[in-house]
Image (cartoon, rainbow, N blue to C red; front, side, top):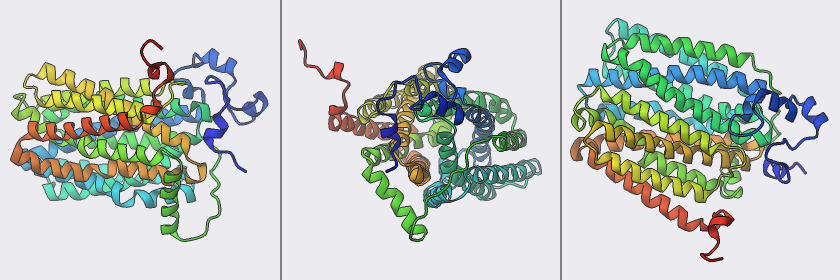
Length: 448
């Protein structure tokens, strides 16, 4: 019988792969002496001792920097084209993330059936094409809100198909004990770029040079594709399975339900995304109407990224075991921080609140993604991670659309406050339901 990833990891020291030295050399896993020489012997950076992951990490860093530059610019361009209509901004998020909801399960089946690296490379090529069209259309003043939505939908298709394959490749590029480090480093890179990207985008948005933003993303995606192509990982060999595509999609859900608590983790991700992440659609209006200047929008995004990077690194420390109890506690704190943000009218306090929001958001998301990745079988990894993508990005379009329309009638502060309250209550419920997950030293009665 083939052992699961969890079973392979049991009994292994946190600092050592569950392999003997000869196997480690044969599989390209650095020895403990090599890790010490690289300064990567322990902690959240240990996955960088694997060369394939280093290439993947650098490509991810470059690509995500371009993504955040273009993402901020897409919002800024829609604000300019629609005269800051929150409904149009909600529609932008809707079409950008809708493919993740509709197609991620199919993308997960593809990631478990075909060459994962080739899927990622094709998606990079699609992003390059879309960004070239965006840059040209923006420079020629051809864009309208409707045309922008159409191109954003095409970008969303690329993101939907690359997500499950990219997550699976990250797990294939490291040894099992280093998986938490790999997941946290990808999240940290995403959030480092959430700082750098908006800061680079801010002057371009302020001067309406959106075509430069899209051209930068085009170059970044092309560079990331070259680095990804240079990766040398064993090609995943899919298992033979009976049934068609729908049977394969269903088997991914059944597998998640069997590997407890993978399904509750996915539900937690979905709730946080719908009621929490979707508040970002209201940030431009909040900056303009509450804080007094639309220019604060990029700075708020950067503050969120700083906190998120810190949260992702903390959640990914080797030896820090993820659990539903930790996730619930973090989600409760996230909700409280977002409620404080919604009540703020001063930019300094709003920036501080967003930093805390970012910290707990990615601390929770990284912890839950690591938990799910360690529970699933390799043959089902793409499909289960596609469910994670549906829960994370697939529900954002519906939440964003809802918040965009509610924000138009109730105002952005009240709408954000309501979503934050739902997150806080749900997080508290998870803490109570999974209190048996409490670390032993915290679960002892007073005086015990």
